[in-house]
Image (tube, rainbow, N blue to C red; front, side, top):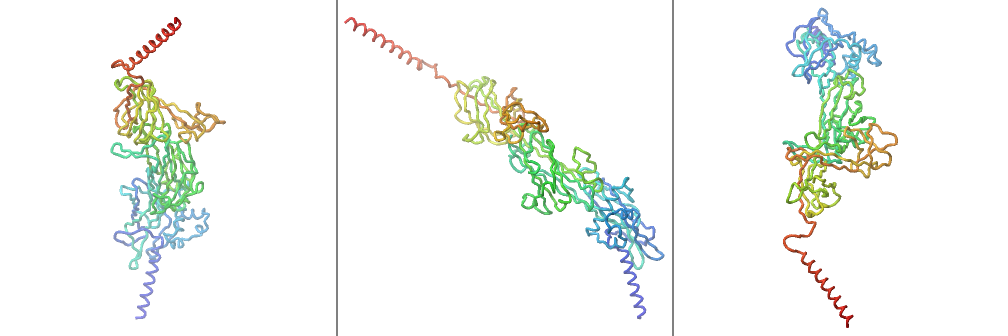
Length: 589
């Protein structure tokens, strides 16, 4: 019995030893299907679950698994490609690593992930890139299947090739026999999950605007000169360790009706960890300008470039900055004033360097997602005419525009009707306004009550052709819009030093002896007869205002005061005659 027990114990130890060899620590694949006896030429199918359709997965062999059925042994050796990687590596650990060392590593360890990343980067840096041992496209459900894979372990590299593509993390897959009852068996199919991330981006308009309803939706409105605060949101991708292309940036393009107010260093960026509420910066960590991110401003384009090593611990980043709705703003809802945000990241982390490529340059191999916010603004025009004859237009009426019924404080602006009886004011957000007549046309009564206007997309139903004349200054404190003026093409305007007024110079760079020009005031002149009822959102609100005559005292309906003048004159004449007669009689006496 003792001999049998000893034999059984030795058999169990041998089987355990076989199992230990057959189940290395790096195993990540899950077997499925009915096991069959393994041979030296056994193969299996490996399905990799991902998250995108139409991409390509490539499998590069790292470790050979050789089964000797006569000796009933399974051994592991590195592939020639991996040995070449070891030889060129500057990492001494990689150079001296054996297959046994490799098999002892934990797949969850940072060291293992870093090693796979370094090997992947080595492969993708070769020219030409080596052919993969196996390739497979992803299908509708996001999976890819490698057919007839030889025994061993592989590193799987994913390449995104679609806009908005996911980022693949390096993963391993194994086709390895296991011992059952003293015999090596192998599954016909294996599966592995490849972790991915899909960055998303959106933009919010946080303050300085008024909401309006239009076409069964909500839109944002503002007045010219208003400051608007935008926040860009972007989730951070997870790149494999040692990825060589970790490009990640936010790009924003402003329409010519918007002027960036914040300087590069004033753009505030915060990082938020998984689960943090991004609605408050108190829940985030403020990033350092110049260290964690840089900002490039080129005309109406804004780029915020991030250093991935400094932000990879965050789930979400936000970048907040201010813009001003300027005097080039488009009126009405036909076009509005858009601000287009694009979040860009590398979806091919092992192809290319870490330099930043903006949308104006080559962007092959990048995923991106867009988001647009549009701000709308409205205007009003006044049609001034004689109370009893609408075709009799009145010039010279001066109106002050207020946002309060009492018409107190400094008015938003003043306008004067022209020879056609028209006056216009451009650039108002949705709201209630009041026109106070401060000067009536000559010969007409001054209005005693303000004219109320409820301005919105639905009420602004007129189209108007106008021209605008602008007065400029170099004194920002005297300006009505506190950012540098631009021309209609978004080019900055400049004036001679200490100049007030005059025609500014448009230049992308500052001319010598010139300083930024600022808008003091604008005057909008109606050039053609307005078209009313042109449809909701046309931009201009029509305001018809009549005046009654009252500059002269009445001279009709009777003698009025005329008889009094006649009687007075007659009395003066009689008195004069009486005085002269009295003097003559006095002389005779």
